[in-house]
Image 1 (cartoon, rainbow, N blue to C red):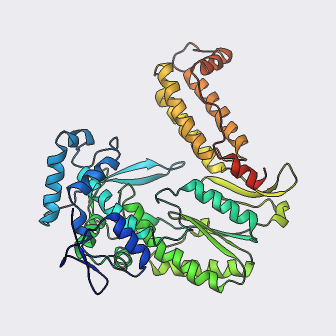
Image 2: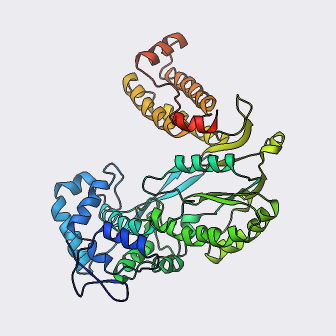
Image 3: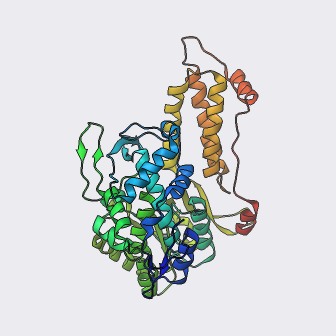
Length: 448
């Protein structure tokens, strides 16, 4: 356990020792929003890295050194001691980040960076330190990559805000290539608002500048961005948009609006609601300029102002956010309500992915196929199983089961099943049916 002292200047030092911990850091961050923390680097000891090890995904792909979690665990304590020794003696060097491309929609892909396991371990420890500091700073409008806060909470809060407050216009926006265009110097300046520790900041710089080994075995040295897939990336992205967007909206935009204004952000995906058209117009014009200040760019084709009012339901306007389509409708009791269903784009993408999965797995034994199928269905229902979305769940389920039936019957020239036999087997193996997972309390609140 390391100890530290609180100096007269309001910083943490080591002249006189006192116990420090993540809990103590959180409390200090909560008490003093301008406090800058020193000597956080000293927290990267064996105990901290051992805790970080417990939180790593042991099934994740290996980095450029090809060391898997299973291999690392064989000599776990010695491996961690070596990392700590390298950190203490300033001999720690980041390894190249292995880049892979994963499918994203039709004919599109997204680059994913996979750090070496030793880098993941240190990143997880540093991310945890930054989280306890910035969790006290992040605003309620931010939902992505935060402990105990996620997409469902963002969707529910947005639904409630639109349902019960006076909003008539939505600005939906998309930041072009956000993770690839984060400006390193701006990011470091933002971190230094809270962190006065050159050693820890130096670590973060190393990860930002780490070379990327692409699929053609070429090494790319990034001038901007943080690799998607790096454990440290989510908290860094949240810090960047906290200063570039959230604080600006809260302290600047809202104060200049004549009516209500609301921001809901999940990572780099966000929507804003306004009562008056002129407030929405003013924000729309200012948003691009604000983001350009931080070297970010709006995707103009995905940034729009949408009329969204309970009094103009005939226009049938809607917007998509976090995989759901939001629109005004009328409940069975005749009340105006916000209706949510799976967005058409996400539904098509999910069905296309399911089709590819069927093609790849059709030759497995039926028991294994149904076990994997239930995992996929459970994950889908757990995310999209919100109140009011039952029809979309059934649509996905029906098409998915028909797709599976088709591909199982293509395993050989002879047809494997007829429909009656297939449905009987699906029931026998306990294939899951669509299910709403959102609580009934929420249902009563919104009077569906």
